[in-house]
Amino acid sequence: MVNFQAVLDNIADEVRPLTTQGKVADYIPMLARVPADKFGMAVATLDGGIYRVGDAEEHFSIQSISKVYTLTLALKAIGDALWERVGREPSGSAFNSLVQLESERGIPRNPLINAGAHVVADVLIGQGLDARAQLLDFVRRRSDDPSVGDDPEVAHSESLTGFRNRALANFLKSFGNLDHEVEAVLDFYFYQCSLTMSCADLARGFLFLANRGICPWTGEPVLTPSQAKRIGALMLTCGTYDAAGDFAYAVGIPAKSGVGGGIVGIIPNQLAVAVWSPALNAKGNSLAGTAALELFTTQTGMSVF
Ligand code: DON
Image (cartoon, rainbow, N blue to C red; front, side):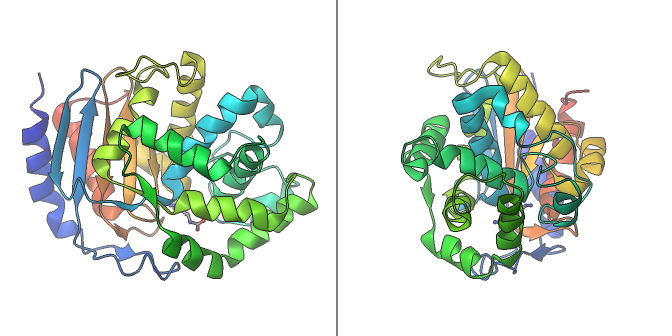
């Protein structure tokens, strides 16, 4: 039996010096104010265990990690029809790159890059419900924490500087791959990026993906086992953008990162693990967070390989 608490304590000591080596995202001004020396990590196990270290209970901006939640909701809503509008290949490009979208005629490579998430957002706002409220309620239920929230200042700041997202969404619209107006899609997209929650919330909140789609404490089937398998596969191949190969090599688990410095990963049938350290590496993934997850899989001997 792994002593998760001892592993987390050890990792925190080891990676703390790395927390100031990357660069906190500043292209969204409201993200730039987060101190680089924050570090938190949490593990949630399928048997109900939760282990924390550092700032594991502090809320932060989950940014692109939200793309896994929205993908989950879109698959629940329309199933495999989603794949008529978005692909499942790693992009090998930055998360906000415009190039492929033009040459591939408005079909984003995958749902975990920005353009793919815009298509997913378009699906969700077309379901005839209050998409924002539905997403927030879903994320709260997955984490079992009603304090999961959103940060309107971050969403507004991102909208003011969202030139590339506007360009991507306009490309999608020009190719007929958005049903709704560009600004309506972006409004929801900026909202999802502004969700705030803690490492402990994220670790609990991804357990259903480690549990064949079933929420471990309620028994609710959130996704079918097959859908959960497919989301795990997409996280492994596309969840850390153009660093996905290096990340899989170093860490060895499906994971999703965000420019707020969070990364959450799953080990099927065992656990979910989340880390937060705001300073990013050149590919936009948390520098100390990536190192912490590599240490975690190495020290516990647990991965998908
Ligand atoms: O679209 C954006 O620029 C951000 N709100 C989300 C990007 C993000 O988190 C990508 N992550 N690594």
